[in-house]
Image (tube, rainbow, N blue to C red; front, side):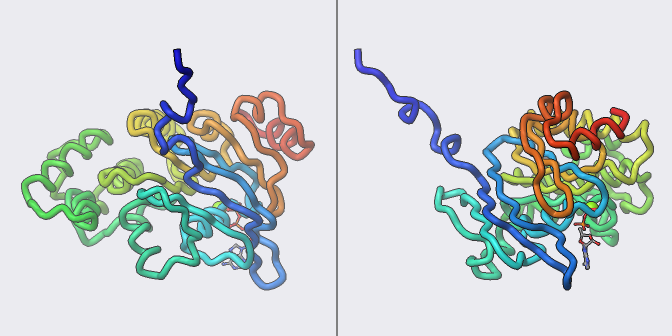
Length: 269
Ligand SMILES: Nc1ncnc2c1ncn2[C@@H]1O[C@H](COP(=O)(O)OP(=O)(O)O)[C@@H](O)[C@H]1O
Ligand SMILES: [Mg+2]
């Protein structure tokens, strides 16, 4: 009997990280926002980035999603064809294409991630058109499917997002981001602006979608209960640097670094 090596049976997509970050740094004037940040993200993995306000989480996310150019370091992203590209060595149009097709970005404030002048349905449809969908009936059908998926009454398809509650707007923003099947989704405090009762439902929904779609995601949050529910693995940041990383339950139940211990003990979960 010939032995099959793991490489023969493991799909190529599982063998290499989707994102490889090496020595990333970003300053604003003489203020350090991120320093020497290195980690990998694997396909299907949800990585939580936690730390107190000002620890550099949003700056890191903005660099990773090419919205902000780092001062130093490399961000290597594995493209659909398997090639690895350094984000800021790509041309500007190539980076823009990644943002439109490969990635999603869920803002804390849904108004920053929605087109307020368009209907709910058009907000979802626009993302599909950006990846080449042209057939009006199909686009509308997909938009309606996604409204249902994120628990918005489909009768609201032609309503403007500003007529929605904050929780509905956030669910719409999520639908707009996920409809085009991105390979990687960035989320900055996705439940941050919402009432606690609305937060819990949204978290359940997000977790279900991550599982169902096998999404890779980076979720920035200062709320450890959000991290606990969504993330497989955590990065703890302090003063722009990673102080600890590990499986979510390990970090939250048995934090090793004194700062992580303080963070965990000071926060009700
Ligand atoms: N555009 C900016 N200009 C100047 N300083 C900034 C800017 N954005 C962030 N900072 C500073 O960088 C540090 C990290 O901020 P940020 O990434 O927003 O942290 P977090 O998201 O963890 O709260 C903070 O000291 C913040 O004041
Ligand atoms: Mg932030």
